[in-house]
Amino acid sequence: MSRTLNPRLNCLAGPTGIEPAAYGLRVLAMANTHASAPKPRPQETIDFEKYAEFLAHSHGRRTAREILSYTKQFAPCLITSDLSLLNTFAINKKRHVLAALANLSRFLGCYEYYRSLIRNYGLKWESAKTEDLILAGLAKTETDGSVFEWIKMVQTKLPHFGTFLEFHAISGLRFVEALSSYNLIIELAETQKLNQYYNIEKEILEHFRFKKMFLRRNKKVFISFVPKGMIDEISKSERITFDQIRNQVKRRGIKPRFSDVRELFATFATRYLSVPEIDFLQGRVSASVFMRHYFTAALIVDLKNRAFQCVDALKACLNKETVQIECTA
Image (cartoon, rainbow, N blue to C red; front, side, top):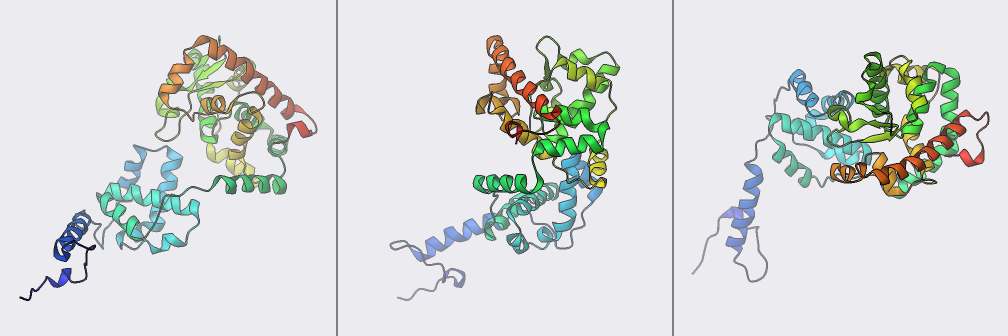
């Protein structure tokens, strides 16, 4: 007796011992699950003003601006359901574009469909390999000189940024975090409220007290050990904006290396602190780990003593006329 199968199932042969029709039905059911997810309409008109507001609720101003820029460039890839272009990008660019389109798909209500597109095009969320980052760092040092030399160059050509750069180096904060902290110190000092942020007894900036500014969704920082003398110096300074310092550095013909300043602290600190302690100070721990350690007085006192050894050594290198071998980073 002959049997006629649904033509859509003819090509769906199952594994040995499994009824082809039954196997095909299961495959179709899985396919229909993805097909039922909302898709962006081909002629979708994106309201970028509302999209910018959407981003502002979950991202910092600078990050939201970057995501918006990538979205405007590559939104057609999502609207046309064609992500083939992304496979031609370098890892870092691909990651930024994928993240931008993920935000757009959430805004448009088609995130599950976007995830299925990623799978269909064989795309992966990748990060640069550790060995590649190490080699890139070595190459950067060979071609651009040490970070100390870069800081001294900027301080010489733009002396009004000198205090900020020293603060950035000894705090180990990310560039945006360092700017936020620097300006917050000035603002609170002007209103006689600096004690809400700076614990003068422990000589600690307690970033965790300003959650919106420093405890972001993906990037956090809880505390920084900073000498009182540095805090006093910052309190008398003028506020600095991201665009102001970056643009002035570029106009002097100097390549921006602010991200390297954070790496400088991490590299230099290995002489005085363990890797977990450096991660603790640079915010690479969970809130629960932070709370467990920060309120243990003996641990904080010991950590402070060694952290200030690192700070003093960093400041000494920054103040040297010539950067010696022991200060190279």
